[in-house]
Image (cartoon, rainbow, N blue to C red):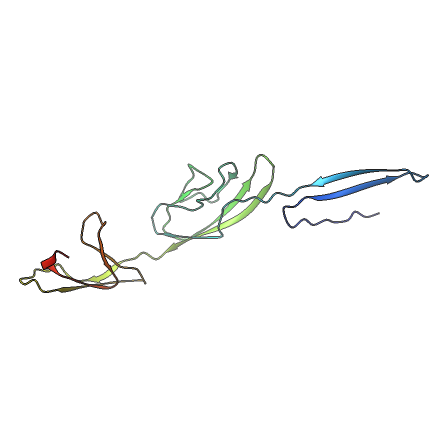
Length: 173
């Protein structure tokens, strides 16, 4: 007699019952409980980073799991569940993950996409004004961006957003 194939597609338990019947009809039953565990690795299939900007690429990784990254170039694996990527070009990493407690294993891949660097391509030049008239400052970038304007070196006082802003030197803004 052939064995049935049981496919488990979720994390619920499956109970398989074994029945042994002898020649006079006496029987004995035993149950086998099969539990499935889904490894929640935290890994996303695609992560976007800025070029040469150290970036954690699995912030919700499970530190109790074992993550093995390949290749390792461009990765700081001090914390393998959430390595820091510093890349100049996009890279696909193979990542086997195992749970030492359950013995479950999973192999997946993560594509780390390095985005085009942003550059301010034009801006209003440094300006000297002789009157307190409002002045329009303008800037553009090489890629679609959010431009923010601040009037302090610590960048705590946001005075506007967008590709242009009108400032009034008489008011200090």
